[in-house]
Length: 161
Image 1 (cartoon, rainbow, N blue to C red):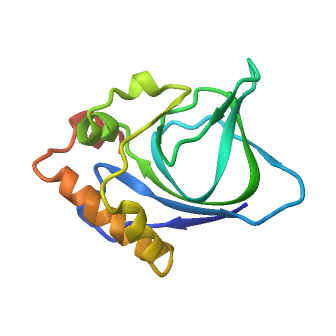
Image 2 (cartoon, rainbow, N blue to C red; image 1 turned 30 degrees about the vertical axis):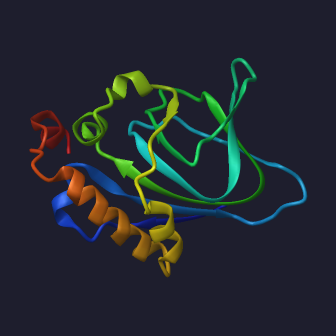
């Protein structure tokens, strides 16, 4: 898996956004299984091509990952990611209060899990038309700026940052 970290070009998003991650997996003859370590933050993942599943290491349950998902913090090693073909994703790493402030979702309900979220109109088309990861970041920057309009920074989040 090739991972590319991309910074936001919008300083006004700092209260809500840590940055972006572009990820690509090329075709392999056998499925790829990747351990997902504990992490403190939520992120939005957008699948641009291919598909993957999360395997619950406790129960063995296999969960297909939706095209656009909100992943919560992981308190421990809980999931493996299983990739059976090529995969391309773009993710927005969120500050702690972003899920509730911009999406209206209580982040504590997401601990050790993920949920599908609505795909904004035209988002996939804009991301597919983008020339590279930085251009994709600009697309999400614009969309997140619209969502953040009128929101004030969370005091606890500001102190933690």
